[in-house]
Length: 289
Image 1 (spheres, rainbow, N blue to C red):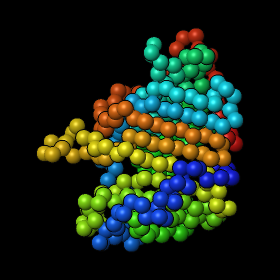
Image 2 (image 1 turned 45 degrees about the vertical axis):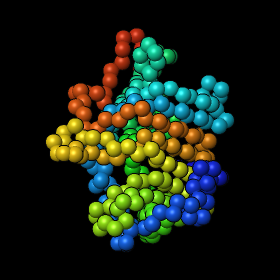
Image 3 (image 1 turned 90 degrees about the vertical axis):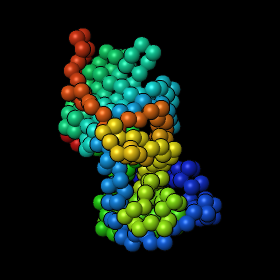
């Protein structure tokens, strides 16, 4: 990602609140001491969700874009299956207006508004044709599940502050990433491996300190695994509000989930699609290809 020139306002407010200690939350009596322990433990908590089916309202703003693209808002039906399969149906009252699919290798976008059908390899540029967020399908899936794509890091540190683990990553080129994992206050006396963590924020900065990506996860709700036979049933705390900002591009995307289901039975071939008769088929490539 290219360098941004300012930090997202939401990130500034969050940082200020943390510095002032507004939450009053406590760190666990026994805390993780290695960054990898925190990130791996959180990933294990969410690994219970192998796929998701959801309905969401997506509100996307792009500064400096033409009027027709400056703000897009609508209902999107979402399917995601680990590690890198996704499907998004942009809905109208008459049915889908556009459908994007990626099976991890091939990409397709059917745009019924303009009677066009795009095909090509799965990559960040092609995913952005519908979502406006240039991320690989695997990274988009991670964000929806409540995880963060991570930079390649040579240094990884962690501290606990204000009831949250703050993981700091630093790459060879000087880029950094912070990940903030909130600890449930009912778990402050629990052993580290028994603590339930929720990822609240991540910020990626370039070597000059300019924010490239800011993501916030909020409104976590427990989603039951339908395969669970225990009492109470097992499941996963999933974020129902995901806010993605790309400050340099002026892109601000807010996803509010109306409902989320996990570990559902998905139809065969749901992550691929063929053009309807009469649609113009247009190959699209990825950057540098």
